[in-house]
Structures are given as structure tokens and as C-alpha cells.
Length: 274
Length: 221
Image (tube, rainbow over all chains, first blue to last red; front, side):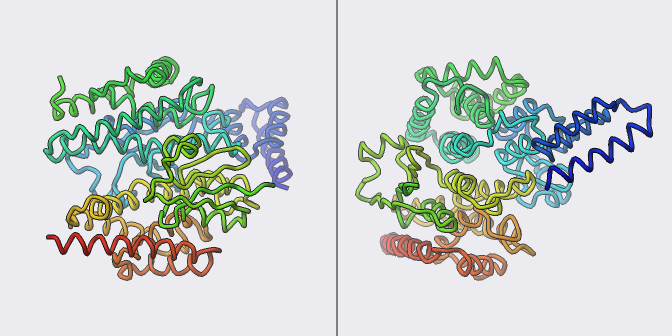
């Protein structure tokens, strides 16, 4: 039923614009392609197709972020991979720019990154990465739809959030933001988590297999931040190899590296690492 | 179809959240309770399944998965009749994902920061940590304003996971009655989620354990 409605809609559009406006690029070939697209993943393909046929530019989304933040950089890696434009709005968190009434109206939780796409106001970086692929991806390679494969990606995203980056935060945030002494026990805990990540990467190029997924974006934003902050990952061979692979293959990696260095320089100063 | 092995600890909100999804889907489960206090999660057989030795962990016909929220979304995607528990439409799905991440990164995290140092390390309760938790509860109350459930007009996996967290918070004698939307939503979950009594029983177990430790700590100080 859904397919029929979209075929009908496509036919209407094609008939109206192909026959009525010779200036458009749409051709009978485009009409046929339109029908074929409707028989597969209708909604998303239709939207992408219409934009490409009628030469409309990709939608731009407002992206509130802080360049040194690992979650922010994960979203930028995904956006670069998907090929969507972000309208970057940098917030200086140290100046409290996340607490302005305008930003609170968008995100009452006043955190970064935050994405505005039409009527959707979305925060939580990993939810944003998933949304970008689900809504704007040309296919599902970055976030496979098959439930078992997707669950591996999801597990890795939650591991990154709830274990790996959390343990890094437990290690660096007290000295960085509260003037507390460095706790070596927290570094031991982080190394344990890196050991688990090393195990998950054994025998595979990326966390979910042979292709990059959004879990790799999230994890590499984290791990590159650790390295820039003076954490030694050389003892974890699979992590080191994967990090090198991500650097070579991920579009927009330079931006991630710059941001990680920005965070890392701050962290090293407070941790007393040269 | 063989039953799904479900490694579980009743007092764990993570475990109970995933169990609520499984019960909603009426799945055939082989529940394997692990006594975490006795270190049963550290046995070699379990560590071989899950190197992080956490609950919940499921084994579905040889497929092993942990991380409660990944378990919830996997079960919904694999076994859901229709997509109402975890919508396919990207914007609706994003709202569910955001709520799941809010639970992990904000609500559960702040609850752990307040309760765990007292319960497991004998430290004095930190009033700043309690304020931070109350702010998270206020945020959730705000999100629920004018909304029947966390991310949609119907129950989604985000409600399962959040209901496990909030029920646990409530049983730790942290006042949620002041948050009208939150209180009403929790009652709605209780009335409409199959197997909710398991969530209540487990939350009560954790609450009693936590209360005893809080009392012990305050009598020493």
C-alpha cells in the first residue's frame, strides 16, 4: 500500500514537472528511476531522489557544538560520512553560551552537541549519529538495519558512553575541573576498558566487522581524545591498528584530530603530563 | 523457537528494564539469576560469554548480547509485531534513542553518583550529588509535560528502561511525588506494562539494601 501511494505521488510529480517545465533536468529516464526507487525503501529514497532530480541542495541542519568535545566530533565524523551539510554554531561552554534563553528554548538540558533538523530538536551525540544515517543516509552501511548487526553497533555505542568514555571522565575530569589530585586507580580502570575494546577489535577492521559504522565514529572520537590526553594505547595492538585505519579512511578525520588535540592539551596541563 | 537465556539480577535496574521489554513482547525466557554479591558474574563460564561480566546478558540461539538498552532495542526489532515499541520512522526513533541516552548518561549516571559511593564505599551522602539527581528528575518531568510517555503517545523501549531506573530511585526514598508528570507517567507504566510487579519487587530489594547502608553510614558520622 505504501509503495502504491508513492508510485502514484511520483507519477504525479513527474507528469507535472517533466511535461510542464522543460528547464528541469527531469527526463523520462528519471521518471522510470523514480518508479524503481519507490519499490524499495520508499520514503528516504524518494526524498533523496527528488532532491537530486530537481537539483535541490542537501538540507542543512543547525549544529550547536564545541570543537574539543568528543561527542561533538563523533557527530561531525558521521555527518561527513553521510555527506550532509551542518550549519555549525560553536558554543563557548566556559562562557556559559549554552545557558542563553535562546539555546535553552531549543534544548532545556543545555548540552552539546545539539542538532536542529526542521521540527526535530535532538541532542545526545549517539542518537544524532543514528538519526543522520536513518534519515539522510543513502544506504544503511553506516548503521545496518539487520537487528543482530545493528545490536552490535548499539552495544558498542553504549559501551563507549557508559564504560569507556565514562572511565576516561572519571580519570581526567576531577583534576581538570575540580582541582582534585590524579587518581591512578581511575587510569587502571580506563585501561581495563581499553583492554575490552582491544578484544572486541581482534580479527576485524572495525568494531562491527569489515565496514565503518557510527560506533567507530563515536569510539574513535573518544580514543583519539585519550591519546591526545597522554593515555598510552600502544599496549593494545588492535586498538592502535584500528585507530590508524580510522585516521586513513574516515572523511573529516582532520577535524577530529584538531579537536582532540585541543582537549588533550588542556588535560595534559592539569594531569601534569608533558 | 528455543527460549532466550536471560542472565539477570533482580535488584539491577538495567536488568529489570530489559526484562520489561521482554515481557511486553511475551518472549519465552530462560531466566538465570546471578547473585552479584556472591560474584557469580565472575565465574569463567559467564566471563567467556561476556568479558564485561554485566547483567543483563542474553543468549538468543547462540547470539550473545549485553548492554540493557541494546538488548531492549534488539528484542523490539527482532520480535516486535509492528514497530510501535521502537519506531522505524527516523524522527520518532531519534526521540526514543535520545530518551535511552538520557537514561544512561544523565539520570542513571547521577543516581549512581549519589547512591553508589554510600552503598558500596561507605562514604557520606553528597548533597551536591543529590541536587544533580534532582535536576535530572526535573528535566524528565519537563520532557513528560503534555506527553503520555517518554518519547511517543504509546509505550516504547525508552519507557521500559526509564521505568526501571525511576522505580529504583523512588524506592531509595528519593522524593518523586513533587514531580507531577513523572509521578503520573510512572503510574501509567505500572498499569500498562506486563510484568511490572517484577520491576517493583526488584526496586524494593535494592531500596531496602540502600536504606540499610545509608542508615549505617549516618550512624557512623
